[in-house]
Image 1: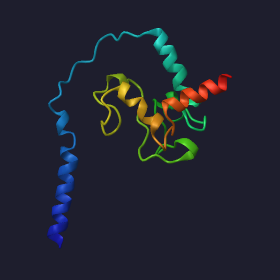
Image 2: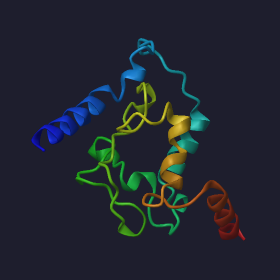
Image 3: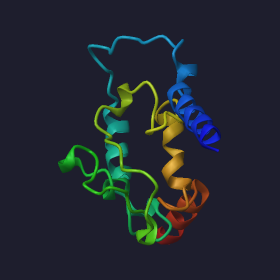
Image 4: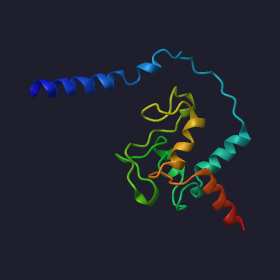
Length: 142
């Protein structure tokens, strides 16, 4: 019995250690010394970052968890989303996220374009969808 438990433990350790091996062959590129910034896109991004209409109940925004005065994260062990639902992970910082090789703690998202949909659609984070966001925004304007 102990041998079987040892084998399971060794297997789990193996899985953890080799989880990101598939990324090992990706080239690591140097960070650009300059980064072109489109000021109009930047202004739109800032507006959306603080917009609570991006959540199901219009109560949270990206800034609700990614506090810019707290290094782009929060002080909670586990983040809180829509209706105070507890997330399964701590909020990662958004500072310099554009330079990350992968996004999220697990590296599941390849870039920010891929990442942006995750919290909007996640049932414990913003708990909505882009069609719902657009529809509710249009209704609010009329």
